[in-house]
Image (cartoon, rainbow, N blue to C red; front, side):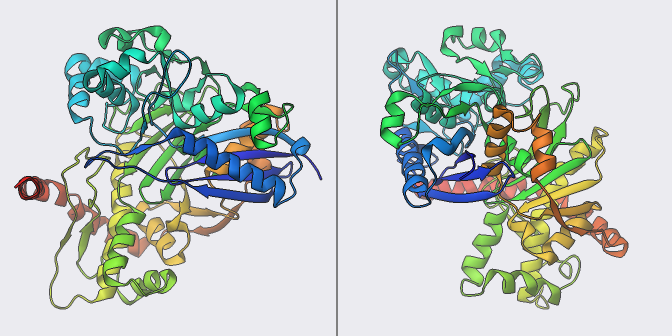
Length: 504
């Protein structure tokens, strides 16, 4: 068998390990699920040992069940769930469960950061401090678990802890480090101003490496544990959105990515750090050395459709459900849905906003409601794109991935609402393929990540905007943009009432 690289996609609910050959073909794939702990409302934690065990089981199954020979595994790299805090003591032992990206306990700490550093913080980190990011989690532990924090000598993010356990070496790549909001993104160094403002020693912050840098070889102990050989090289890897952008071929300034998973992401390749979105959308270092990407997030994208389907169409196959929108018309016959069922991130960082249907009358049928949900999700993506328009960021192609790329009707809705060409991937494999491409580049199989993308990624169907639909959607979107402001106070009052009931 020819040599392969392993792309480890470390997610929130499972890990998926893909064996990829020199031609970019996935020759085998194994996954393993692990639990999520939510001990209090708004908390979300995981045991880092579950990541190690789950990854090891997947690798062992690749060897035993799929016949991948350990000596043929030339390199390994990672795509990792972002922002999760893993605190280590002086012996590099885990001090407490990891606090994950979707944990929202840190509202007080985000306000402290904003109060103390204000615009200077955004100028350095290129992002506002939101609950999901790592720095607020560090400050939460410091304030609420001081005895644990006194023992902490460093911290890692999820995939970096996994890499440490596989190599015995501590490091963090730039794309994931940017998501801690403690990094000087343009300067590519930990920010001394942030460290000093929050009394965090420089020694607390791990060494920074590029995604394609060699981070070490498989250690003797992990080789014994997993069946791998110590000849296998391990590379830095990337944050899941950066690796996903690599796997989607998002490597040119004229392209953005539209990703519909549980949440939704609109991401754009940025060649230079000088563009300033003033923190309105995230701006991070990329997996490609000395480049960047910007990103806006809709908290409930596919999840909004999944919720609505679970309540009103549980037994209907997904394709039939989505195809029902053909029975409606552009703008869902005057029905608008805002997908704020979990709060919202971009452009409204508002944990208490909630979704709504606006314009319901007795003529509306189920197809109108389904179409309104699908359109509302894409309108929320359009909200992100208006920030790009505001800053003069030009692009002409949208690469659609995830659930929104599985339906020709939904893809055409994207093209018409965005008024851009929308393309799909011929063989979408996501962040795991991006991680494998990073390993292959690190090994020298390709001259650069861009070179790997040109050789491996091919685009599929293309959807062009329909001028008549574009004009109609522009009218509906102008109305959609008014709904957040019109429902904000109502949503906040209702959430206060629900908390009152819960505490009664």
